[in-house]
Amino acid sequence: MQLNGLNYHLRTFGCQMNLHDAERIAGMLEALGALPTDTAEQADIVVFMTCCVREAADQRLLGQVASLKNLPAPHHRRLIAVGGCIGQRDGAKLVELLPHIDVVFGTHNISSLPGLLTAALTGEGAQVEVPNEDEATGILPATALPAHREQPWHAWLPIMTGCDNHCSYCIVPKVRGREISRPFDEILHEVQALLTDGVVEITLLGQNVNSYGRDLYGKPRFAEILRAVGTSGVQRLRFTTSHPKDLSEDTIAAFAETAAVMPHLHLPFQSGSNRILSAMNRHYTAEQYHNLVRTVRQAAAAAGKGDQTLMGSVALSTDIIVGFPGEDESDFQATCELVREIGFAQAFTFIYSRRTGTPAAELIDNTPAEVIQNRFQQLVEIVQQSAWQQNQLELASTTTVLFEGNSKRDATMLSGRSPKNTTVHAPMPTGKTLDDFIGRILPVRIETARTWYLRGELV
Ligand code: SAH
Ligand code: SF4
Ligand code: F3S
Image 1: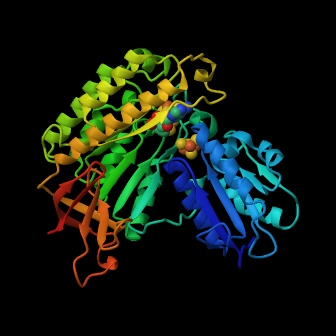
Image 2: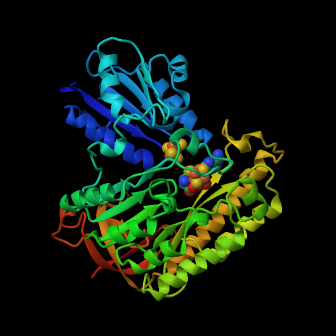
Image 3: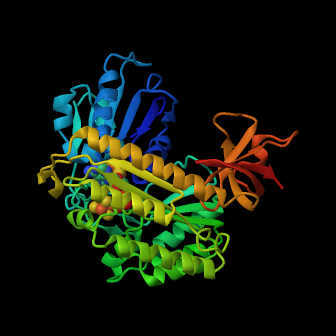
């Protein structure tokens, strides 16, 4: 099986799981001789890694695939492959809808892609292979493939796949399957290989990393992963996503005490209303979320994380859904209140999107779309206010920045991330080039704090 002389283009939607799967696909295609291109136009093979968590993502895929139909190919023809969560959900239906799709593959059989592409290339017609997780036993898991990392200094490291939760709005468990944890030793081996390769920052990935190991060892072992990876020599360790109901005392202690674990926690709360949280099947109340955040901040401050104050010890980010069926004004106000009280550095806000096959899809909702849109706007403003306030805490302090490149807006500015995961810009010193900074961690004194970034001078 060879793809020598062919160019490929990857387009990725959705969460870091897809991003990481895309890195494995790139690694696999390049091992077979294919070369990446910047545009679909130059490519002989276009691979879409799709997301169906909300309706907007679905629509985008259809539009993008449709638009490739009449685009001239660099050689005699172009292959279009659709993978990721829409591939898993829709399978052969995609080819019925858009007959110029050549390959459909799912979330459990990424390693089958080269074989499917080869079959399509040799004129065997559209190839659809979307096994469910039980049928996929024996197929090489994505984690066993070589990855082509986007950035040499950073690695996504999946420690588990799938999700065993049943949040009533969410399609992810359907398209990603049950939780499967990677063996502890395998993770540590990969960490060693990444460190040898020059990686300085690792982000552990899973839909619910807190429950890592429950399937393999009978009890969660996420705290042990944090400690083991955090003391491996990696300079920065991050992880996503944590579910509030599974954030154990032991994990909080490991988070607080392990110096390499960055003082940032992504902890989605979804709604501030207990009635809605219950309808979402989230298994915690707003009060419990509040107490959890307090415990995390106290533990982190006591262990010397961040600036060691309660508010400044850990930067919190979250996900929030507006317009869940039955959400009324008082439910929405409870969400706003929680955002104001907690003080988030960042929040990803989403308008509820009905997903066929989820329990919430059966719920009737009479809230007019304009009301939901209006609530969404209000929430966005509250989130911006909160982020601005959190960034003011950083003024006049010196923080360490892992430099990633130039600022998108201003090529004379370097850009990177602070331990709290905030974007930091600093002017490029004269006589230096980007290569002197990329992938390095250096101190910056913060002089300006805006809503979504900080600016300062290298010290
Ligand atoms: N496992 C992670 C990520 C899930 S998807 C977690 O639990 O946090 C990322 C976010 O998308 C969710 O946190 C939720 O806020 C949002 N989301 C999921 N399903 C949605 C839906 N049907 N409509 C709107 N937002 C949704
Ligand atoms: Fe979806 Fe809930 Fe699982 Fe997150 S924890 S992936 S929101 S079911
Ligand atoms: Fe989307 Fe699939 Fe991730 S639905 S959010 S790409 S798990």
